[in-house]
View 1 (cartoon, rainbow, N blue to C red):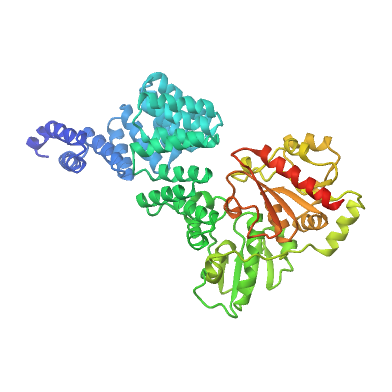
View 2: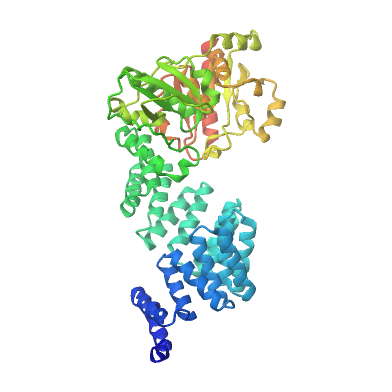
Length: 562
């Protein structure tokens, strides 16, 4: 070791720090590395280079350097804090937590360590503990805007929306120039369905950071919900312009195109769902050794495996396309969810139907059901409306006919709520007690839903005029049989809406102001199901307006029957 070079190390550290603070990272990095060549165990150079590597997102190198610096000086809290950050970015959350705890044990007033500890606890879904850490950080540093914002994010996750908004307000009061704070507040307003307020926050976020694709994407979502679809499309395209691989923006753009009946680009963009993490939580592209068929290869006399990928209603809606695959000469094997097997088992053209719990036969090609419109190029620009392409089992119909006995009143099948696991359930479902006052006594009502939410059970028990069979509906073949016996079906946007439409039954579908893409905008009918009539909210959250339409339609039906 050259003693003259060693003597110069303090000056080199100062020079490196100056470059580091000026964001001249490459210059600073070269200086720190030179010091470490002279003195490999120099604590200052190790921890400064580790910190620099954090800033330039070289997290593994940062972790290695900071771990080495801690071995030399285990009493420096900031090293443990920075190592925790590196480990968090590498998704080693438990290890990161240990390092933040160590930093706090060495220096309790290290408010950054408390804040970072809260971030890791949030990743671990330990929200109450995370909230406590953020609050400690704020107590130690009352002007800690980031901690207020992080606090708001956790409060939002816990459903404390008003508290979350106050936290974001506080963060913005401290630092009104953070695009992220407005973005986070926008998300909270969006959760509360306060669309105009959400829109203002996303636009403020964009004004502060024009190249933030998430703000453009979320702005598009709000504009779409407000039926300002042309502006929404521009926002999605702006998001994609800043990040060409932004799957969520591509996905949202496709949904907007489908919502407006622009099916060509809609189905093409729909293929981005496989890169969208949110979608893949519920449905994933299956991995097969056989190639994916998207219409390019001839499939005459080829065995093709088609499979359900999303909800029950999606499967019912898209099995209509199987006919066109059969017309191309393919031998079709179909896999659907277990509740649908008996319903679809006799579908024309299907060689064999599988439950998703069964093993799969050998085949030549495979394709998810909802990719069929894109694959079948001849049908990509319009909807093949098919009347009654699903039929109820005759034996099941006879069974349920006996259950219902002879009735003097016409039968109305009703569905007022969907599955709570559906991401949009709070917007599409109705509480039973809101619907009942609008149901005319002229009819006998039959519940077509198997499950009833807790808050609806007591209401249902008080209204004997609504027959509910619950678990007697073993699968959708039972539901279809009941549908067949109804004079009309009244439902929110659930799988039963698709079932009734696919059976060609007269059906009233109650829709929120911002509907799912398949119901288009403003139309009273549906290109997917010719016997369906759409009852739309005139304004956001205006279920009362929908109920009045329900009442009017039932009165009209009553007069026809008389």
